[in-house]
Length: 430
Ligand code: PLP
Picture 1 (cartoon, helix red, strand yellow):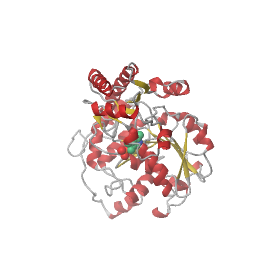
Picture 2: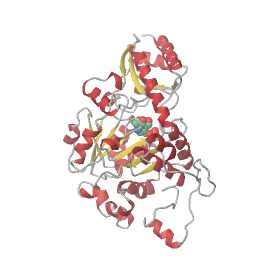
Picture 3: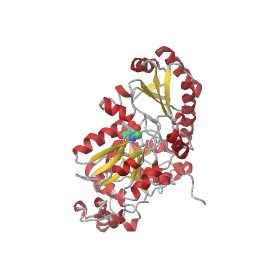
Picture 4: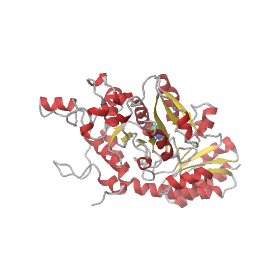
């Protein structure tokens, strides 16, 4: 059989049935620990001579199915599920950079990621160098000897300009620098590994979970980056690790496959920092993953219809959606988003911030929440909420103006979504 498509892998990868009971649904392994077969087995597990369950902070069979499934869907080799998308973003960088190092990040980032990079990682001695992603060469210009990674979002809100993945990945690969892609807004639509990314991360809280009931994150290793070829560029994977009996990660796990990056994230960062996903959340997110392909289609169709509708309304001065981009951004939309343009869009009201607040307060069907990627339609005013901890200059750099409203369009019937937007626009006036 030819290799299955992501839509099929979303239902089948990583699990067939429970060996003992033949149950088809993935069980929730709500356990902290696992009995060893023997002292030899225990020693082998700790020494990574065998891979297996030791303690749920580091691995769990329910989370393992989620990890195998997402790795297969993305075309990667292995994954690490974590307590949140924030933990995944932090680990993805901390796994390569230590005090004194830097990484180059796109300015177009989720506000929480921006804060993590600009403040918390900086305080840990890791410098984020922010560059405008509309010029891929800006990544090369910001690179120096201590640059360990590039980081960007595939379809970042609020600007919703697709990131030039292949262009930046190629610049990095020539220098031994992996591109880490946050693909939270575009599961099933874009597979960053197909364009040269080395690491993919997701907030599972969004489309992959899809039902707004669980926080989770994941890092996926593409297994397509030659860490060993760049010893001075990637010291954390190429020098002895004093916390693991001097293991050199690019060599220690070679017999297990090209998984040096993700193994280190698990057995060093997750071991020490402990941001483990709960088995129950892993189970709930797996339920979402099974239908994510169908939902993404509906999200994309509905959001496109909403974009067209908003363009026809006189109260709306600007609609931000990939379908409205021009120039190079339109070329990248055609290149990266032929399978759909996502479920997010933004718009600006002629009446500015006051009209934006009136619009949000008038919504009846759409929820006013700080989330995206739920099956339900959602709305928010970023300047006063998700991006409020940024300075005004930082807000502007990430594309948030005072009158900007963000919509995450769900899978309800399109007529009902449009009716709610129409009545809220009427109520908001100019
Ligand atoms: N990345 C993106 C693009 C997000 O939108 C979010 C959350 O909104 C995150 C990362 C962080 O994920 P979490 O809320 O699961 O920690």
